[in-house]
Amino acid sequence: MRTYTVGFAGKGFWWPMFAMFGLFFVLRVSAEVTVVDDAGQEVTLTSPAMRVVSLAPNITEILFFIGAGEQVVGAVEYSDFPPAARELPVIGAHNRFDVEQILSLKPDLIVGWLSGNSQDDLQGLQQLGLPVFISEPGTVDDIVSLMERLGALTGHQAQSLSQASAFRASINASRETYSKRRPVSVFYQVWEQPIYTLNGDHVISQLISLCGGRNIFSDLKQLAPVVSLESVLARDPEVIVGGGVFGRTPPWAERWQSWPTVRAVRNRHIYAVDSDHIARMGPRLVEGMEALCLVIDKARHPS
Image (cartoon, rainbow, N blue to C red):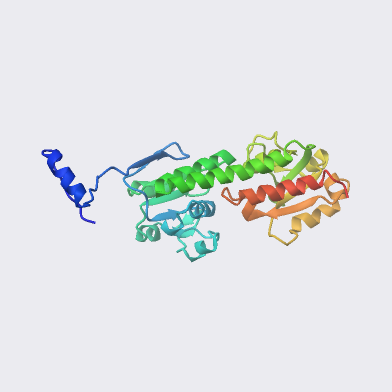
């Protein structure tokens, strides 16, 4: 394609001639894009990012989901989905990444994780003049917004809007199916020793509600509080669920058999949901929610 610089003087004479010969004019318009990240900072790029480094596995998934996978040049460990992400250069872990290696990749956008990355390292990258977008999705709506903003920053706005809309529609479909059914009390176990759970502000607790469940520890103030065994027994959940590996019974699930007075144990409603689906704030949360809704629903239908 040839680029011509044409003055406006005499335009009435020259324009028909150029049009007649089929010449193209390239209008130089600004491709600058500005979005606000989850830390409340404006991130401005003069053009869509073509070399992106992801500092969280869920961010890597989102970038591939919105069509920007080929622009990702580096990611932290455990960025293993989709399969193409496993071929990316690993720049360290989410909490101890290699700044020099990141610089060697010459990124024009770094997508960080507010609560998972080292704040000193993130600030260091910013001080080096690199554009850093900070993410911290805490709700389904936050994930939708994150998809859309990353789409704008990578030049995939139309595809990101479409994918975000499909993601929201899938979440809403599960909500429509399960949310109005009989409420079921649920204990979500994050860790065993000590026993960690989640309060009502966590996205997993929100999914439990969308499934028609009731998180028995939704009233606690801390996002991921430690609770005693006695408090779980006292609140007597109908379902106990936690993260695990597909097809395997995690050790924590087996140990609940020592407490047969708990309804979930007595009625055999202890389940593991794939951790990569339910714990990563990304597109596969749809699959995690559907699995969660299915196991909660089993408690409504005694066998």
